[in-house]
Length: 285
Image (cartoon, rainbow, N blue to C red; front, top):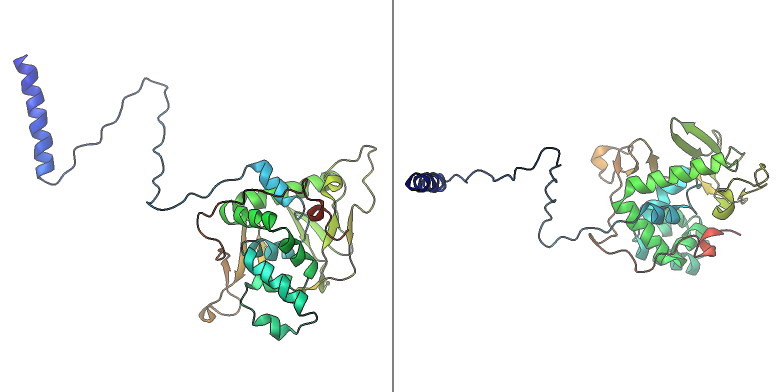
C-alpha cells in the first residue's frame, strides 16, 4: 500500500512540475480492444458561426433536373445569379418597366454581372424571379455544395444521352470529354440557344425503344455569345468569372464566390422541385 501511494505521489509531482514549467500534461488516449475503430475528433466550429445545412442527393437532383441540359455558358451565368435572389427579382422588375432599354442603362444597375447577363434573356430571368424558393435553394446548394450540384448536372446529362434524347443539333454540340458531357454552341455559332424540355420525358428511356421526337426544342431567339462572361470548369467543378481587379489584366479569371448570401443562412422552408412546379419544368411551353 505504501508503495502504491508513493507511485501516485510521484506521478502527481511530475504532473505538477510540468504545469509549473509551462508544459501541459500529455494527452490522455483511451485504449480500445484490437479491431475497434477510433472515431475522428469532432470538427471545431468557431463560436458564433453557423454550419450550412446540407441537401440530400435526391433534393439536389430535383433542383437541377430542369436546367441540367442548358448549355454550359448559360449555366455558368445562371448558377451564380441564383445566389443573389434579391438582385434577380429587382432586375426582373426593371426589365418589365424598361422594355427595349439600352445596354448602357443595364450596365449601371447595382446587380451582379451574371444577373445583368440574364437580363438579355427575360424568359430565363423570369423563371428565376417567379420561383424564388426554388432559385434560393439552388443558389444555396451551389454555394455550399458545389461539387454535388455540378455532379448532379452531369448525371442528368448522362441519363438524357442514354435515353436517346440528348445529342448534337444545329443549335448545340453535345460533346463527351472523358466522363464529362459538354453542351456548347457549334463552332461558328454567334448565338446561345436555350432549350425547352420536360424532365418527365427527356430522362426516361422510351418504352418502345425509340426516343420521343422533339423532346428537346429551341426557340428562334438566342443570346449573343459576346455577352457571355463566365465559364464552367468541369475539371475542378467551379465557375470562373472575370477578375475585378484591373491590375490582373482583362483576361484574368477567378473562382466565383457568392456575395449575395448570408453565411450560414438557412434553406427556405419550402423547396419547389420540378415535380411540384410545372412552370419550372415547362419553361417556354
